[in-house]
Amino acid sequence: MPESFTNWAGNQPNDWVSSGGLPTQDYLQTYLEGTWNDDTSYDQADGYLIEYGGMTDDAQRGLTKRVVIDTFSFLKNCN
Image 1 (cartoon, one colour):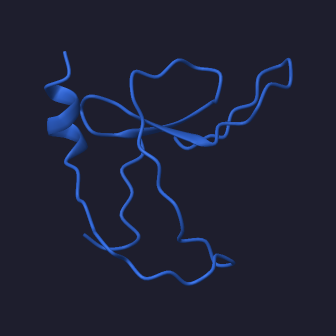
Image 2 (cartoon, one colour; image 1 turned 60 degrees about the vertical axis):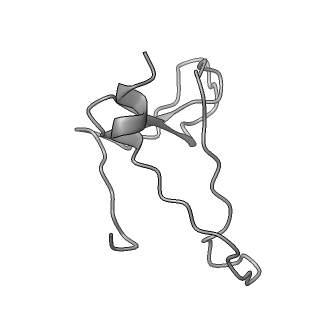
């Protein structure tokens, strides 16, 4: 899979901000069909993944382990 792979749902990411000025959408939500949505920090999540690094100003780090997760299969079997 190329480094630039994306799978955003239609009209996403939209970085929506509520009329009350609540936080922008800085989190990733994965739909069951495998597409992505940008989400807010105040929505409830059943689980989460955290990715560190990859930003241009990050310190260089060596990988010690790489894990690939098939989120579609994972989420399909969660219910």
